[in-house]
Length: 407
Image (cartoon, rainbow, N blue to C red):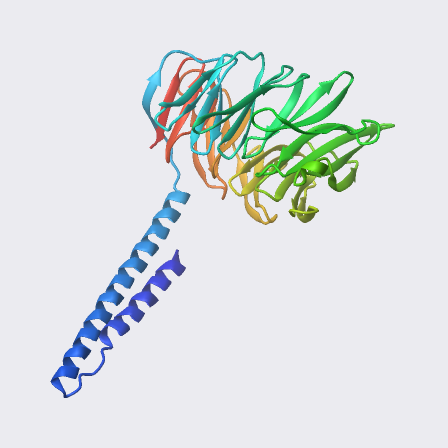
């Protein structure tokens, strides 16, 4: 903050000198008139520039103050006493997806519905990429694809779905149960099968996690094998740039003694690969290569991904606070390291905020480690919290659904 005020002071001094430094008037009256016009225009331009600089610096200061501000209470803005114990919620780029076995709705920040759809699924699951939403029936065959405007496509798979992921354009990769084995089917949003990947379980292992790139041109899959009690992971990258050779493996890495439980693409070419002992970032539109890596000695309790960052939760050994949160940029640079007091059951990310909750408490942290709020829920057992505004959050308990604002 001192640097900002120093820059502001220097800017004022420079502009003051420039404003007072006018061109000298010649003796000729016509030339003197022209010089006066130039001096006036110059002064107007400099004053406008000074105002822009002041407004910019004021905005930076206001953002820094807001970013570091903490709250110790909240106000309930609205409340519905009817309990909702069957719905699940997901943050989708500033909006909230509410879904259950009967249907789904995309909600605005004021909880008005953007769209609502009905379906019949036994175990609905959700995968998102940006504003694209994939809803599929685990152990079933139904797949629905939506964006902020509504349905993009829907289709049914030939075999039961174990899990699935989507790209920003709505393409879907589904791990299907094929008798005693598995295969990966790659579909367009309308259900056209683009490719089928059938790796040998004996050679490659079983797929435990996968992710599509933003444009759907790359697929990263981690296969786990266990031979004589020794576990290893094969990480394979597939390219879909050439439809005639859509199953081409463009990168293949083996991690002995390591499990990769999660993979998430940050954009078209950067994939965050979560290992059980750290994280690796892979980049490249051709053959992906590891561009950064962070290794951990402590056991990883939870992982999460936000807008341009990833995070980890570890158990604290010598602290009154039970957990430690570390966040990293996509280049592997440490952003923050913060002790976490809440004993949480659930964790979610809304933009640049990390939301922790248990049945009776909630805590809100920024990616830079600032605790914006930590406190208890007044009534009911907390089941869900999602951000719906700058200081507003949707809080769902077994007794009511509330909209709260930090105060």
